Length: 296
Image 1: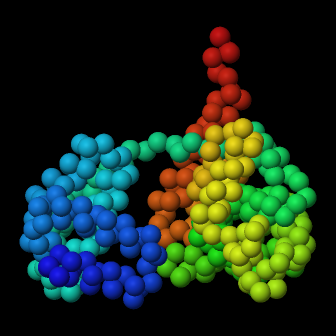
Image 2 (image 1 turned 135 degrees about the horizontal axis):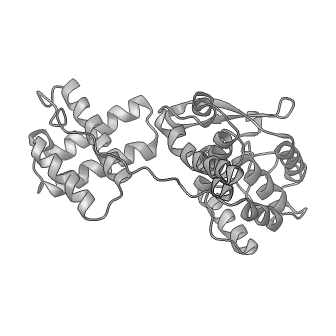
């Protein structure tokens, strides 16, 4: 194993010990391998500040978004901080590199009429319709589950008396998310049809596949894709529903601190990022109410 593979393997072990989410750990490793390739295989411990600055500039010039470049910067900053702690390098080459700016632009929100059509597409009484309605409604609640959290919900995680669901999130963090009356009704109806499923007694997972077994993340994506086709609307993925939930929270005046607790975010930048679309909509509604040019 060469030096870089040794560094990367040790860094991966560090994140396994910290119980870093698999997706986050994969992002770190991907950025490191990109830097190794950019520097023609040179030892990561010998990479200079100029090398990293050129790597980030190149990432921008080949068409990466400002958010992606910023993510690469943060990934490398975390890696070289670890290298300092492990005495692999004397000083991080990231120490004097300015943090790249992220272009601020509102993230498009799923329109309300599209949501109405999506729910209408799964308005039947069969197993799939009951399941899909309950999942879509839960994705729209404040604290909307990530797709991995959604498919990981167990029967024991449901509290139907207090309308709460316990989610196991990134980094093994646990949080409880409340849901409203319509979502509770949809889950209740799903539980009744679930009880007649052939795997009902032997599987603890809440969401079951129609043909048997547990619904997977891939199955959840496919379900939404299929329902969007039936509804005749552009494709919506679970992340867009999570963003819609965050948008609705911000639009109703929900605080950033509460959003962090509900959605499982560790950085205050996340609620601010998702709240920008709500801020734009509120500003537009205020402008329409004032209609100041109509005064003339």
